[in-house]
Length: 415
Image (tube, rainbow, N blue to C red; front, side):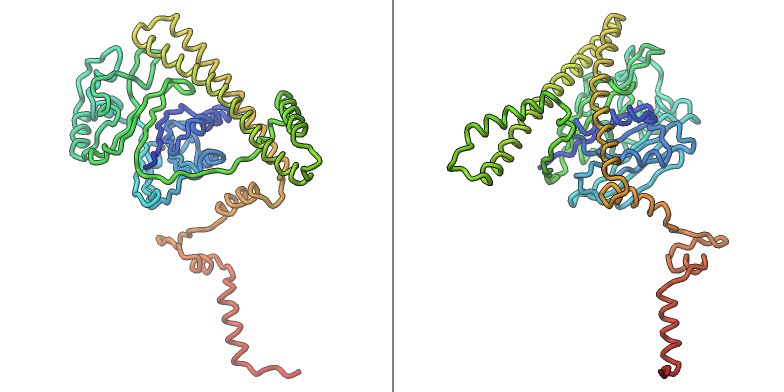
């Protein structure tokens, strides 16, 4: 059975296009299938920008200001997800999505705390499942509040369990570092029903890189069908001189060996395309592995330095950690620049021509122009026919039916 890979990530704002691209790039490279994002700091309109590349479906809850809070659930375009229920608040704090993935019913709930109106709400959530002192460094002896005890009892009654704590009952790891207080804490959680805990394959707390929170990755066995995608040439490689020289030399070697009198030109060219495709795949794979190895080295170094700093709190280690984070940010920025150039190229080449890009833009424009509800006094009008009558629009079907009836009752005109 296949695995559904889910990540929870407090991104601390996605207003910057560069940071938004970095987050989406990390989701795509890590091959996540579902992403739960907190603190997006986006409005309803800006949340729709998250479905341009990696995600096909985006469910979100925005704060009215569009500058704080905000949660979103992103589902990869290759996941056959059919929604059955969406429920969210108006303050950008939580969203619930029920649906079906390949015949399996699933529920995703993305919650962002704190709640400014309740001062002790954060610690209450921390203590809902695990002891607060085990998830903080230096350890805190703050007693559990009445709200925390109530929430903890409710979670027990509901049969919910902290997945990471259930897998690592004696380990200590953290998802957030406060520079102001010089302390670590684990404030990013995955919860599930106890009856579904057997589906867990793995859960990992990744290093802190893009945001000030660490992503938490979950692998969940629900039995997905693997999908395949068609290979296409990356046109950006044509600007790479090293790649062009590689293809020229490889094609020359191919022709020197296979261009014989017995070989027909058609067969020679068809085989050349297949041969070059394999060579290009080999070349691009090697380049990707080099970049991936460098990125993995930086991530491993960040993880190692992060663990050392959690134990020693030395300023030298913190400086090395910040340097490694900057190197990783630069590496991700190079990839983002390429993606932005590709997006500009797509808009330039397609323009207003009939294409998939235009269809995507028109689909959003048409959906925004649809009048799906009217208010008449205290009543809400939902049926399209009633909306047309109320607005005074012409309903073609009714007009045609009326005219046809009048014509049939009158005498046939003589010519």
